[in-house]
Image (cartoon, rainbow, N blue to C red; front, side, top):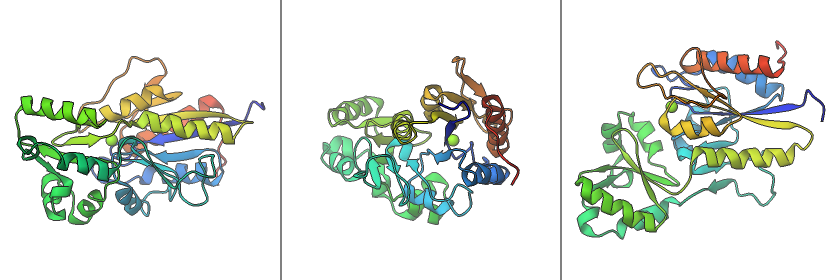
Length: 278
Ligand SMILES: [Mg+2]
């Protein structure tokens, strides 16, 4: 194996990581991303809680363009035409965990006493999602285009929530707490999706050492950051910065896309990965 053949897979969260918390811009990272992709040095793979529809609408404004992506917190892996995850039989969209219609069927089948306390995205119009989330109407419509998870508001007691949790667990659907919303998801995580993608790159690039780099700022990123070969926590000036005691996890020197560039540049320098100027 030639010493110089290192292929980094950069798994990056979007909000508060590659995208600035306030402006939602990734601009300071555009040049570096274009160099990495243009010089085929590695791959940059968005891994986000957003839906695929939301990510698609963002792709005009971030330099990554259409690429392999992971959406809905690890539940959906998308491989666009021209890319491969190894097996030719790979579907373009792979769902880990449970599909959306299965989740909705399980919700519909719940006892009325529990069902009446659930108000999911499927129960709401775009305007209602907009009001509940603070997203614009257009973004809310895209956020409603779900494939493998359902955010919901809960108006019942803690006791009833525990009952709901155990009924849904029998169907392999778990409940995760976000901010204001709870989420029904299958058993999929960002780190599972990352591992799956890395395995297929290892098979496709037998002459290279494929390494995973993961960057994120939220509690739902921590498992992925710790599971990666090189994990970077992004400071979160708007909330609580997550922490890790793992020696291979570092914290970026600045939040958002500026910190993203500093973290990747530092890692590349340590690994001896050289980008040319153009
Ligand atoms: Mg984030």
